[in-house]
Length: 106
Image (cartoon, rainbow, N blue to C red; front, side, top):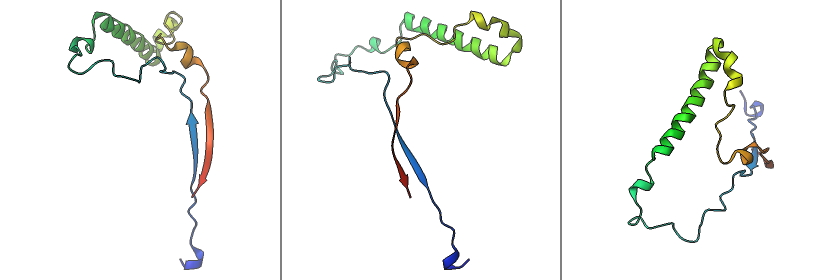
């Protein structure tokens, strides 16, 4: 191929900005919660309530997997929760705001 007959290689990039739906304004950012020396290790480990909540979430996820791959169990779909409930359900159900910032040509 000669110099005058080379192919052009064109790239385009679309840069998007996504708004956070779950805010963290309630977290303090002026000072740390505690020092490392004052932090109790037991506050970082899961307690029995955390373990039970995790087991319940696993039950829901396992039921969805069974429903998906075992057609014989689809009759139970109306008795299963659609999602795992959490404290940010209202925020995550809102439509995400996505804004195209620019298109870059290279």
